Image (cartoon, rainbow, N blue to C red; front, side, top):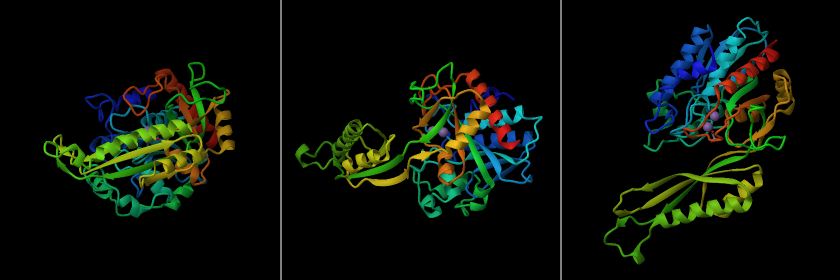
Length: 392
Ligand code: GLV
Ligand code: MN
Ligand code: MN
């Protein structure tokens, strides 16, 4: 089946009226995507498993000797996310397997859909893969809540997945010999050829590394009071500090040449006629240089609480070169500013590569995220070539 037809099957799942997709982890829409994954796997005769962290696995020839070549990505999205971030990697994996229908691999192949990659609901990105490798402790994961106070355990239970045994699963990690994640390009980061992003002539690339990435929370405390009766001079209004923090983050990022974003704030109680009692801001900071990312947050101060941190994650250059050779052509090399499960596996010592598919809009985590049909099909052919070469 073509990757375009496979993605079309998900076109209505979690579609937001405002555009884009709401497929936050462990919601009804996410469950529907997961049901689709199971149906696609079963229709190809693959053995489906859900691991203790809620990651979905579809195995081809699991009893063959040797560790597996694993391919895949994730199905969850950010609020009003695009159609490609995550699902393109999974649909491409199924489509690549179809291209390899007459091929007999000599080692197991698995397609994986990692749970809760975006961290858009509970705050920690790549929760499924981090739990798997032990990079996220089970207790820390269980302590997370969403904006409505729903715990991760409740959310998983509501979706029919037991949270009782979440945590490191090193036996399973040992079964992953190599991992390849195909992903839509995000942004137009500069390639090794000095070009800003992938081009129509070179629509596929290989990632060299993932930039260091941290998420911090700043809590600002005020005095809740009446908007119509409290003199300006008497107010303790955390919104003023919130505005200052947002500007400080932007200015510090500009001065240091990194990226930093305040994409989420919470104001309590959030009434139009009350001075808030508290406000929180979440800061996402990344860049090519780890020290600069950390020092920007040092400059912000304000008791920022680190919620997650991922260091610079280089991909195994020999493995990436082998994957590139299997695909053929001289693929552009480029870093990824976005985080991925591939990075979590790379940090766990697994040879890992990412194939990136051109996104002409350059926009991601938004409805305008895009990849052309022809480029998606080229991605599948490339992934199939890599899969064939690694399992022959
Ligand atoms: C995930 O896509 C991230 O980079 O935040
Ligand atoms: Mn992604
Ligand atoms: Mn994403």
